[in-house]
Image (cartoon, rainbow over all chains, first blue to last red; front, side):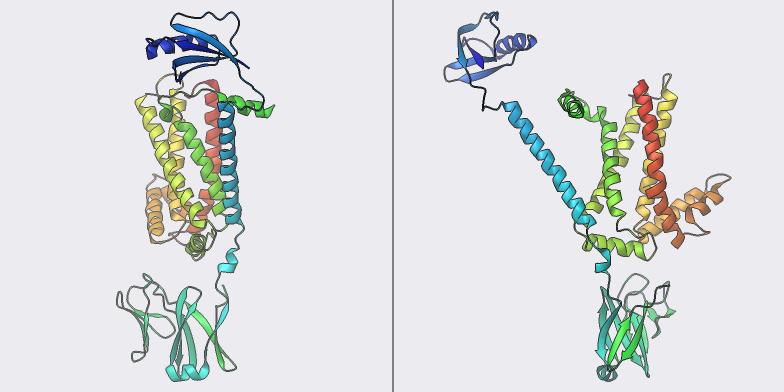
Length: 212
Length: 201
């Protein structure tokens, strides 16, 4: 592609250079001002033959710039923007795909867990364990097993099993539950979550209650 | 070709000054699209029941990849939408868009969009079904109760019973995820028709 280079007189102000540029732009030409070692110049792509050189231009020159294998600045920027856009869309799809392909049931707690051995429980009377995230306890009272959650139904404090009082006591707001988790007194709105505790051979197994 | 149209659209000049105010409706539509996408993703995990709601969101936040991110995005875009629609309404008020031949239509649309955005916010806020959600739902249901004449029936319809309870979560979820989006789509279609005619600007 042919390119014209108009070297400008050094006395020209920025405004006068811009005026030259805008007349060229009005003709629909791709022109820009550029600073070379010898001063400011206006560079015009593919100048027509009838282009009138305005006053203020010290000398003119033309050069042949190869166009094959050369990308314009605009094309480079467009390719970059396209790349960024495609990458952003791909990342969004990846996030959505990873999000959607999780299996929520795998995060559920198992339906039953082996908690303790019967002799151990007879010795200690109670044993704490975790049902998924939930801290729980299994209590042997008489010859009956009770498995309840330790999370208070009021504001989620952990209740403590009081062996002497034979009840669960919440230290936060003076509440108490009986061994089966029923509210004895205090602000909790409902009983502690209950689980089924069964003896299987020598082991104590706690099961989630069948869902209603 | 379709691609040429996209090209023309991308190459069309953009005003340098005051674009935020000028494009505020476009921004609102963009945020609404974000809400649709993230909302559809969240619906894959959310369980609309009093026991399941909080638990399913805990799983979403802690176990699902990018779960916290999608949820935060839904929340942030929702709050952004309220902000942007509010700004739009304020701008329309100070620019006196309610005057002129198409003023009443315009203002009705603005009021409609404002109300539906707040409805989205109120119902969405209740979905985690924690303490804050519960009590904000009680407040909302009391507000509905105060509507003259039909207030009590409307509140019962909203709660799914005489008091806020387990049925209410399902109702709120249905309103948030099924009812309101279609109302929003309808409003957007009406707005688009006005815009074509040049009434809305």
